[in-house]
Amino acid sequence: MKIICIGRNYVDHIEELNNQRPDAPVVFLKPDTAILPKQFPFFVPDFSDDVHYEAEIVIKVCKVGKFIDKKFARNYYNEVGLGIDFTARDLQSQLKAKGLPWEIAKGFDGSAVLGPFTSISNHDALQNLNFELHKNGQIVQNGNTAHMIWNFDEIITYVSQFFTLKTGDLIFTGTPAGVGPVKPGDVLEGFIENDKQFRLAIK
Image 1 (cartoon, rainbow, N blue to C red):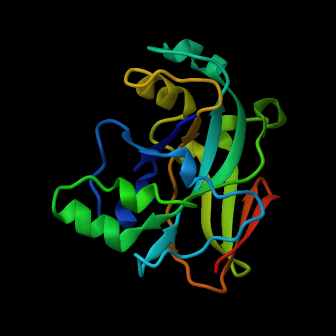
Image 2 (cartoon, rainbow, N blue to C red):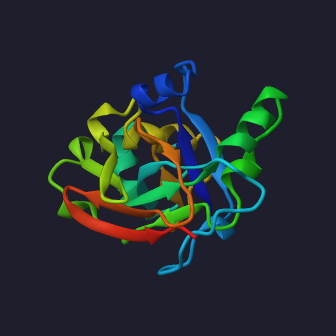
């Protein structure tokens, strides 16, 4: 199982980090060891002083595919959930400034939080899906999949040019504006269409 992540997929998030809008999806990977075990708190790693949350809709691949045409892309995922892509922002910035890969800022242990997955049939409109992240009871991220630059089907088509997709692979589809730091004592709660997906304590 692999975790494929899409960066810079919401214009407002691109602008808040002063990045340039890409011509194609920005793709990076997390190892499976990045997944935070269920019911575990997130421990801020000692190698970073600026870990940020990034709430994202996650889709789960349900069949093997390569070079998938967009008109068939919907056949390759059947479940959706909410996750957090934790990012060691200070480490990422240092590596980017040197032109170096920044996987260690994204793929460290526990950096991928996942709520429960549900069938896409439970959602009326995947391309108009609301989701929120609350920090200590306050809304910090409020997103809708209609605002993605590349939708789920386009992401499937693009990444399958480079990676064979396998059953169980996870795709983080990008984060909206509002990303920010966490510190011990914080509590994060994620919602899809007002249904709570997870509650996460920061240690």
